[in-house]
Image 1: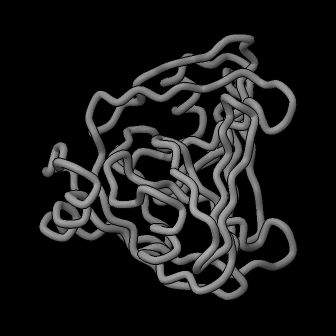
Image 2: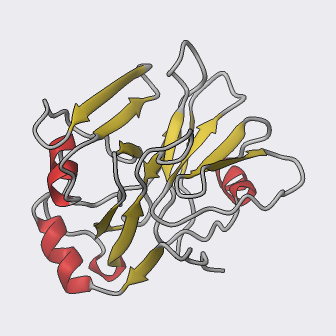
Image 3: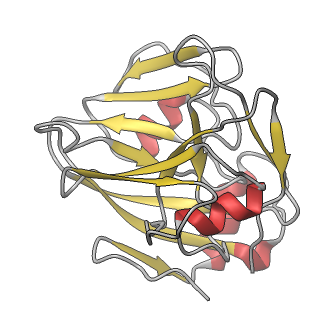
Length: 217
């Protein structure tokens, strides 16, 4: 099955655009998996309105947080990323704050004062592994994991299965609606649907790191 797109996200086949964009970050991988995604970033409001948990493709042109500010057209707001392994958080104020290097395969949080229409470009890298780190002093173990753009997982419980998780939770945030949903892994699938262009918050029940290769088309 393929993910259903929400009204605010639409995948457009654009191999030429994606390949040119990712070349800035290095040689293109799996160009047949290239794409661009129209992404609406919601302005901040009553929590969690405007909590934009954004998934960057594994191969992308965004090396630093300022690259996100610039290429997403952000003239205000912040780009934040959690290091779940180290238990630290980095944040840059757009458009010209101090940049930090983005951690690959980790989602970013964009908080902006007003809604912006942006475009995400890149490609998936087949066979890539993702690591989930155990909980500790916050924010250690707050794993913000990008939903693969060609994922076979439709619900959070599907993702639980792909990581082999029994116990622990997967949570997603709807920045536009101002809502959040949570799935406890290993139970009844409550149909917490994954959304393209977004990352999910995964907290494991394991005391050690979990590494897996999520399935994709």
